[in-house]
Image (cartoon, rainbow, N blue to C red; front, side, top):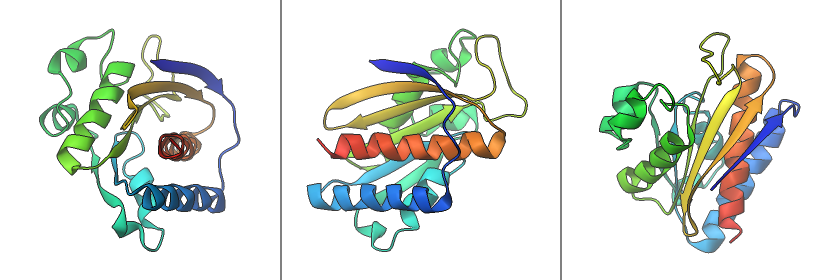
Length: 175
């Protein structure tokens, strides 16, 4: 299952990201669930947002920054055929789902979010403009992917992706 939308939201403030991360940590603690991340274009920003919160060590198991394709495959278990397929590649629904599933396995966590995309300013591909981001979410309710197309510069795309990743985790934890 996946959703797709154009997202022209404003870049979130540091305070907004901190509130979202605190809520995610609070929900995980209340539910007795652990968290993990598999990140590419955000380069660890989701993990950093979560671990900025005091007490996060009670629920955050860790994160994998899988910027390179071989790390996506070797560490997270993304199917090499997906990565090699020009119609799919690292920026697609299947890769995002497999990254999230791989994170739950490698990190031993209950809920994992993944982020893979093209933050820019270069890197656009046919059908995948700068700002294209796929998210994977793996948790008690299964595994799914969500697509967003963000406007803005590299940092705005990355910050917006962090906000969506935290929102996805909160949604899963809200059960």
